[in-house]
Amino acid sequence: MGTTTKKETVNRALREYVQRAERLKAAESLAERGRRGEVDAAAQIRAMAKRARRETAR
Image 1 (cartoon, rainbow, N blue to C red):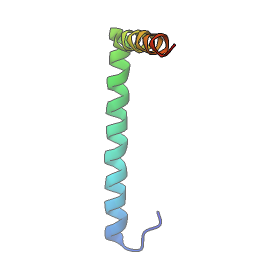
Image 2 (cartoon, rainbow, N blue to C red):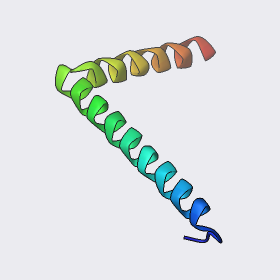
Image 3 (cartoon, one colour):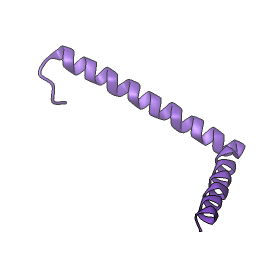
């Protein structure tokens, strides 16, 4: 792990565990939002805003 003491090893392992759990929670949340259709709606809103910016720039 690149650590020199037992304490560093344990602390790093705990940090990595928490980070992994947070990533999993974020992925589950994103998947749930996708099932509810929020991701598609946000993508459509973003596309409309992008088109509007392009048209005003002309």
